[in-house]
Length: 294
Image (spheres, one colour):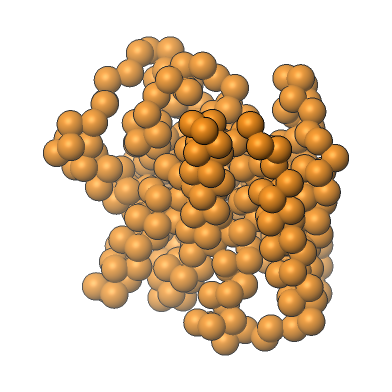
């Protein structure tokens, strides 16, 4: 009964993670449209998230102490998580965002292949969910607009997907990481990411200010939902249901992004988008409902 409850919470955490990650455009696009560069936005995103989590953990007396071995692993995870964001945003300079999203969301296959090296072979039902979800993500991304496909952009998106894949696999496989509470794990990832982005900005010299109060509200929303909540639930899901199934649930991100684009930014809802939504919902429901009772 306890194992079944853990699975249910794991799936719920994975769904929340995918949905909140998909809220990136809701908070990020308005700030970028006002002229704030990507590196500065990412620094404020991780910096605010780090400060909020630190304040909460101090007030609630959550665990902050970690071993040197865990700190080393947290450094690796922080670099991977931040690298995923940087490479994806940089890829948008070279290839259309739709093409970038298509390439990025083959990462569930990358996760499944890497996990096979650890002796964890997905069932045929999980493979069906993976391919259905990836096909749905591709359909969501093809919204017209063509564009020249630059190999640099493709390489950056593949690097982004690989960073995300390795993050999930390490969280799932590392015993020192598994031993950490999800809040502690997330806090140190953000702390490393903030320091990394600060160094990349010339130790703050190249940082640009947030344009106005409304933009600060968007930065706050970006720090809380697609950053803090999404990463905490990602870690929780990975520990509960495994890396491969968590990666399938993560495909809810483009689904959420499409919904926001249609409702908030008035983007067209085409036939291929509708088919993509159906495929993603099928992938997730099929995987959850076909789970064997423990």
